[in-house]
Structure formats: structure tokens, C-alpha cells
Length: 308
Image (cartoon, one colour):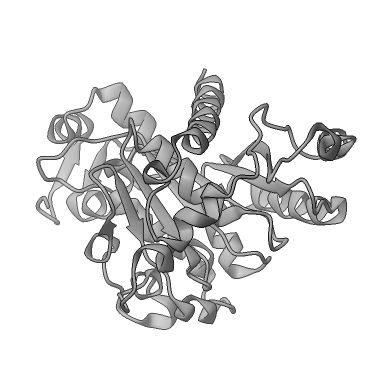
């Protein structure tokens, strides 16, 4: 933490963060840090956005995994895309679903949840760094509980940015932040889409609904226009794939609204086995993990294209 009342120049901040000036300016503009246009920023503002300790800093990519229809495999994609990315990168999985399925796969006991870090209705928030659970060296988790279901009604204008604000101080500690969203529309989902840079949509090939896709597409458009112009739609991932027949006409229907990933996630018994044993996929079936590595590589390719 740096001195709160002191004004810092762009050059001073870049040195403190061990970044090139151009890189810091780009990051500050992306985060819309107050004071960047004047060239001087107060320490109190910087402490909100950065952790000034001796750590490695990353330009994080925040990806919301979302589909308001239930049973599409959002948690499965969130979990194992995160695990695959964590083989080479530092990853934070945010369980942003009141059902807390991702949390319960790893934790038996009651733990502090993301709801306690939001400051909702004037409650003094904890820092997310206080509740993060380290699953492995590169794979960390923000737990959820049923308490998150109370986040239903915006009482304040800033209630749409509670998750975004909670993530700001730790964004630079992770290369990828994956948000596992609930199967619903409303304040919880809007918080996720406002906090995210990208959205990825899982679609189960055996239970396809074009109407659900249309509803989600309209929600994304609304967020892009009114609240988060940087939000990019990465595309839809076909999940629980079993045969070519299941894909007949499916991809074309989806493409009316979303681009479709080339990687499809096959239906495998090892996925529920890993979840039942509360363990990582790598300890159950490397062939299935390889499928998620292919998805991770395609995600990274898409992000590199978006950067250029």
C-alpha cells in the first residue's frame, strides 16, 4: 500500500508497478482510473486498483461463463477451462452462483463467501484476497454460498458494479479470471457482465433452445450499449457432444446470434466422476483434460486476435 494522500505521476506509478509507461497508461484507461487524463493520481485511488507489494503483475482477462438456461454445463466449463488454463497461467475462478456448485466440489465446511466482499446495502465489505482459497499453485477460488441469492434488488446506482469493484484490487494478480454465472437473468448476471471483458456461452447439444440464446444475446447487447462497452462475445461452446448427428443444424442456428468455437466438449463419464470425488480432472482422466486444453488454447487464440 502506498501513501493515500500523495499525488503520483504516471512515471512514478509505472516504476512502482514495474511496468512500462505505455503499458500502465493502457491498463489505466481500460480500468477507467480517475485522474489518468490529468497525469496525476492520488495514492488512495491507486490502492483501490492495485496491490503495491512485491508481486508479479498481469494484464488479466476476465471471462464470464454464462447462459441463463439451466443444465448447459456452465460450472463444468468454468471448472475445467480454469484447470486447463492453470497448467500454464495463474487463474482465479469466481463462483458467482448462489447454488455454489463449484465451491462445494472443493470445500466441505462453511467458508466466507463472495457476498461478504460486495458492500451490498452498506455492509462493510471484506477484501476478496481474504477469502480466496488456493486449490493449487496457479488455480485459486473465490467461494460462494446461498447468501449470494440475496443480491436481487439494486438499492444504489453502484449495485450493478459491486463485483467489478471487488475484483479491481486483485485483477493484476491473475492472468485469467473466470466467472461461473448463475442460470438466470437479473442483477447477479448483470454484475458479472459488467465486471467481465469477455463472455463465453456453453450450450448443451442435447437440450438446445434458440429462444434462450436470443434472450441472452439481447441482454449482452444491452450491457454492451449501456454499461460495459469493452465486453466482447467470444462465442458459444458446444457441450456434452456425443455424435455428429447431434450437431445437425445446431451450429447454424446458434450462429444467428453467436460465433461458435471449433472445439466441442465431448460427453465423458470422467467429468461427473471427478466431481463426485471432489478432485481435479487431471487425477481422473488426462484424455478429458486434453479436450479442455484444446478449448483453453482456442480461447487464448481468440484473445490474441482481439488484442491486435
